[in-house]
Image 1 (cartoon, rainbow over the protein chains, first blue to last red):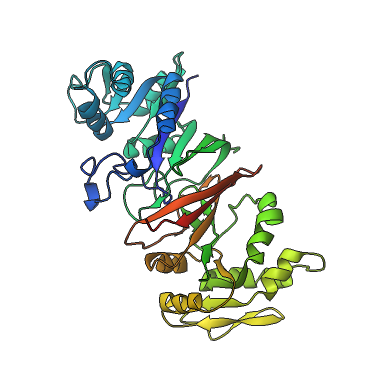
Image 2: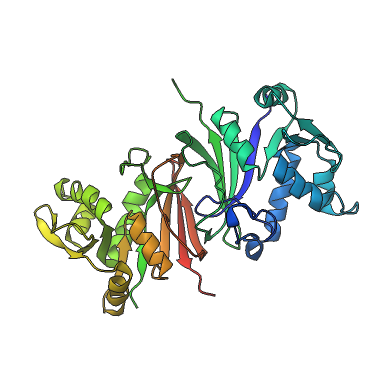
Length: 198
Length: 188
């Protein structure tokens, strides 16, 4: 069974909105976008490639898919990040999109989302990675479909913004698998979901 | 100048307590209690607490057997300051009462920091931490991140209006899955 892995940039207060740019996602009047840049370190790039080497699909919400597609699709071949993201098969969950031609190697999931994702999980293959996609992550968490959280925790408290774990969500205990830190103060925490005994 | 260190338990989703102040989710961290907590208490001569955390700690620490428990001894004897507009007094079991501060916490702590003395620690106390963080008065955070997603409760930073930039000093993992993240305020 393939694992669904949430790979996310978060602040110390669990905010995941617009890590990469001021204009990336300003919903709710969020003005702090681009907060990851001062902490970038080449080891984080190495971490990204390692993550991607263990995965063979991306699962994304509509917004994150559009943001990533807009950034990566136009990149010329040879860009190491662009190549990985463009070649990787992508599944985008959306009830409003009618075509996914804007980003190569994308497949649309329009309905029966949970069933479709269970089917993907049951197929042979490597990990399925989700980044961004707060709405989709909240839905998957509700259905206990997330196997691991790979969190890059930035040394910042943002105070507001979309959160990785939803307010009012289920209480869950996780298992810490690994923690490591980068020279810029970013800590990578790897957690596994624990199957609740009922 | 004396430093203020905030040292809360915190869940992965940023809560320091359940909706009614519950701490039943905390998985414990024996290594921290054995090594880091006594070291932390050794560097302070004041414990700063909000009302709810004060009530929880005052119902526990003074009544634990302190026969050979150096930590309980330190917690019970280090002078405490409680920030509350409603309490009339702040007893600590048979030990010396905590001092009550009813006025603006930021002004009071800014003044305390000017006085001579060792550093000061805050346990729990989300609202107090938030008020002091907003005023730039917290010098270090020692966050004890529990491997728990709580979903609801009292946040560590409930009404922060400006972002706070930190510098990672150290991180340590305990066998129970708690990660202790030690940061200092980054004023650059």
